[in-house]
Amino acid sequence: MLKEQKAKLVAMLMLVFCLVSVAACSSSPNNGGGTNAANDSTPPSNQNDNAEPAPPEPEPTINMNGETLKILHWSAGPQEDTPEGALTLEHWKKIEEKYNVKIVWEQVPWGESIKMVTNAALTGEAVADIVALDYYQAIPAIKEGLFMPIDGFFDFSDPKWPANMEQLSTFKGHQYGFTNLNNAASGLYFNKTLLEREGLPNPHDLVAQGKWNWDTFLDIAVKTTKDTDGDDVIDQWGIVNIPTNLMRILIHSNGGALILEKDGKYVFANEDPNTMEAIQFFSDLYNVHRVVKPPRGETYDFNDYNDSQTLFSLGKAAFVTGELWEGEGRKDMTDEQGFVYFPKGPKRQDSWQGSVENYIAYYIPANVKRAEEKAKIWEDMQMWDRAKQNLLENAEKQRLSDERDIEVMVDMPNWSEPVFLPLGGALSDVAYSIAAKGESPETAMERNKQVAQDDIDKYYN
Image 1 (cartoon, helix red, strand yellow):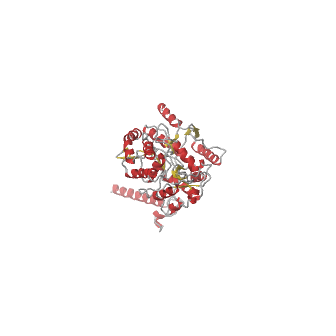
Image 2 (cartoon, rainbow, N blue to C red):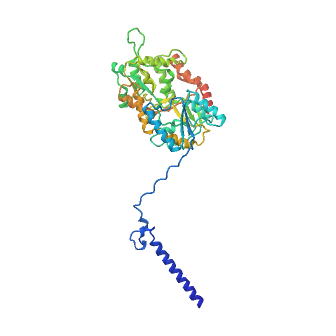
Image 3 (tube, rainbow, N blue to C red):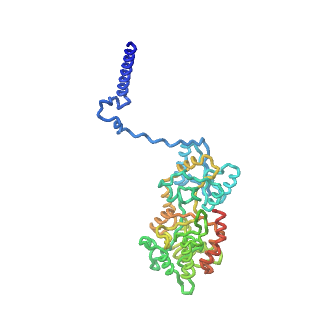
């Protein structure tokens, strides 16, 4: 009996202790600001609805411990005596403090960077952390494992990056190149004064009307090709061009290419219908309509490029293809020049072409340590808010005639298409055989397919 009473007493004491504990917890200042939840008409789960949101997690801190971040380029780095350079260098000082890093820009002669990277690969030490290269230099080096993929290093969906950045420097499904400013693309320069004198439409008007295509391009070229002094010799041309550039650009303007990826292998596009249609149009321009000034000889000659620039500058041609920097060099041209998209072929109606071989981007050598952190620092070094202004300033230097020319030139990088064409000489042989000798496109392409494929296999496969 005594044991039962003791047990009841202990149970009652435990119950009292639990009730006191619950009451104490309910009145705690950490629960509802000191109110008793049992007597509060507001459910406890809603009491913090108006509370301040939690602050975002801070960015991971990068401390480079005074290490150097070296960039190799053949161009000079930012200069203190220019407004743009002074702004950049001031920004870099802040970056150096933020990451405890020393930024070094090393200028080397063009072509030396890739040699330095190759030699350094043998030692195991990186010659630099970030290296500027032309696309055609980078791809063979990537194939040899000299540069690392940067997949995941950057968020290319951020609109601050150039358009289609994730597609511009890829190789076999991986991203390697990156840049804050893409100013590489090809379009078409035209002689505005000549077209007005001949009573022909401005290509910008045809763009606005949705009529800027191969047919209207050909029509203008035919009407501007003529003998102006009556000596039975053509002295004004619709088009002046080095054949290789014109053929390449025509191919891309029709949705074609000279190298295609098929079943995991890169192949010569001698059977691609879009490519062959473009080469046939190229042949017709030279051999049927005769609106392009013939080349000097039957084989590749860079002086054909020089001739095209001279004749266009002298006002002797309506059109010449060109990149975004070429207008500035025409200092002796007295006619007004314009710049417009290259006309669309029948198989490419949804976009403009912008194929270019001189595409420059940055790459990270494979033996760079702390590469992702250095990529983050490089990203923070860029003056992103100045990129569009730089494109505009470049366009304004190109001696263009009006605002529409400048607008197109600023827009052209959005259509940029870097190309690397290791074809064993097939491009020049096909272009010159057609333009100078009148060989058929099918014959020229068939004759060159094996030499082209051998070179493609060497550099791509």
